[in-house]
Amino acid sequence: MTAAQADEQVCFDFLPHTPVVVQRHHGQLTSDAGLLPVAQFDARWRYTERMAACLGDDARAGPTHAPLTMLRQRVYGIVAGYEDGNDHDALRDEPVFRLVAGPAGGDPDAPLASQPTLSRFENAVPIPALHRLLAFLLATGIERLTDRHGGALPAAVTLDLDATDDPTHGHQQLSLFHGYYRQHQYLPLVISEPTPRHVLVAWLRHGTAHAALGADDELRRVVGALRAARPDVAVHVRGDGGFGCPQMYAACEALGVTYTFGFATNPRLTARAADLMARAVAQYEETGQPQRLFAAFPYRADAWDRERTVVAKAECHAGGTNGRFVVTDLPTATDAEAAAAARYDDYVGRGGSEHRMDELKNGLSAGRLSCHRFAANFFRLLLHAGSYNLLNALRDHADVPRELRAAQPQTWRARAIKVAAEVVRTTRRVVIRLSAGWPGWDDYQAIARRALAFRPRTPSS
Image (cartoon, rainbow, N blue to C red; front, side, top):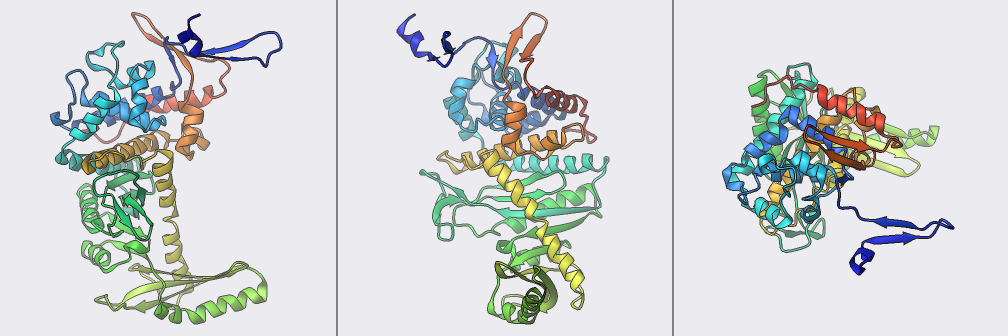
């Protein structure tokens, strides 16, 4: 054995008479056989194919690597937990990645793009392509809503608006210090729809952006696309206190959409809700049970051009008191506590949006925006959003086991993506050999059935 070969192995001695030797094998082995159903579903939906078509010819980074191949490397890599471009220096020879990404010319032995090539690819994407990709996220979101509701866009759609901090750690363009978050960062804007959990908008913004910066323009674009598909669609918009500002009220009212936004507590509101809070405290002291009381009343802040309805929540429990306010234009009787509670609970429903943001940021590492150029980081954000939407569409079906339908991306990897297998190529077929003792076989078959049976109801263009 040579010194180099010895460095390629690890020896264990926990068996009393038999050494256990772990070696790297350069044959056709994979740890990501679970990407095959993902690629099958992608092919049925023509998802990455259409995504790559948004890039145009300017995105080609070399004569041997097509934009579609490189985009699939990145999208499937993000799904499988390889969010760093450096991972692809090893993955370019990985047999399943070569299968699902499809190297140029169909040569199964041709290596995929390396990290430097992928970096050039990300930096070559032009600004118009970013706008086409944003349109693609929205168009596929409408497709998902349509498929989810039997082939027609539903009569009512909810849009959740979120601003999320993305810490930066280098010299990225437009990375700026934000006083509230106390860090250098970007501040992306995300708009999603809770039924299919689809990200309709992922817009990268500079680090000191206001939470609502550009949200009115993006809202107009999204509502316009929804009404083009169904003119009578009713749209309801939700957002936290960062979006509770006159510009967003005016945009929603001009568009004819309803809204519920969080609103920051101030002394005037606290005084208006003082009797409500006192009643909640008294009822808690009397019963010993947590109390949640609600009231709605007209209110006009100094910066507003008119009165609007504010819903107050007064909560008292063992941990103390908690007062919160939201602004809404939904019909709310000011003398009906049940109506006020319903309006506030609708706002609380946007907590699902926080879960989606957690999956996107932490489950799929959407914060890995480490390129120097702002446009390249914008493209990376769209890659992560696209990967998230692909995984969502695959898991959103009754054929998929219930626990995987709601599972975090990390759980998907542990149970369905990170599957060790041997890849055997013959002249007629490719055989993927999984371990007969692997306990996830039933789940794998169910996901495969979902991918093979998928036929989008709406035409893909």
